[in-house]
Length: 204
Image (cartoon, rainbow, N blue to C red; front, top):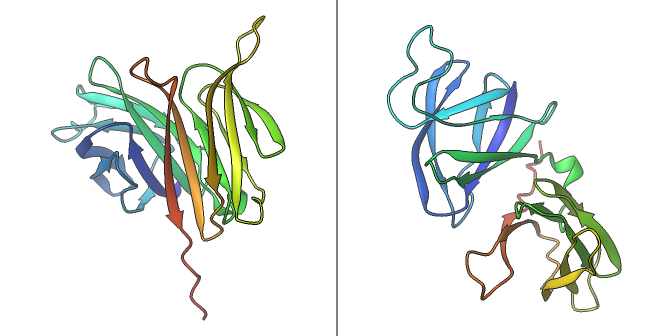
């Protein structure tokens, strides 16, 4: 499989994260403050990550395996989100990042809260299941602004508003929003926005 891989982690830095490619063992680092440079990957669609040493010859699963994930079938661009677990391994969410489905100015929501979120953005409403993503395409008001609200969606209960804000639609960027359960009671949800600037294609 060939794919351009973009990475992000939920906190800190993961340094020298190793994995198997078609040409052997390679590595990259993953950051929480912004996307790392795109990695042009060629290898198996099932990725296994480890932190130290080489993959022993003939051993399919390294003894120091810290995470694994299946890349989306047919995707030429993939976003990998690494979430650290209590045992120092990682839950890895793979999102199809193909630009044909993610146009300039769009906002992609990725729900890692563990529960369904009822979302309202402008006049559009949808439910975002846990560990899934949804892309919003739309316009803001005359100033480019749009109101966003999120509600906890629990069966048999009235939806509870846990987030409300006004965002600006930027047609020069693709914006990915990660939704995560807050670590404290001060906030109901952590909302982290990351943008990819639009790079004009070179004329031949």
